[in-house]
Length: 112
Image (tube, rainbow, N blue to C red):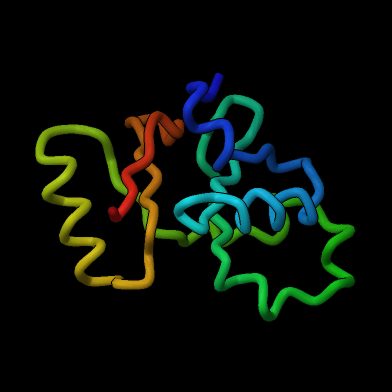
């Protein structure tokens, strides 16, 4: 079960892409993390993904339109230092999902 403070940036893969769009737009980090039923991270959607998001895709599920290659970071030592390096390398990223060894979403690091 996703921790309470992440609920506004997490969406289940089978939920509509339109719901993912809404969560992404209202997210402070401009990112929506798509997870399966066990909270395993499947990918992300960012505000930048939606300008090219065709309205016909709104009937799709969030898991079908998310980016499975989205940047993420593993929990562990030096988490914030490693996150800082990712933010420096990819300046448009505002939020990094934090995953445990099993790929479960356990936290998020915001750029600011």
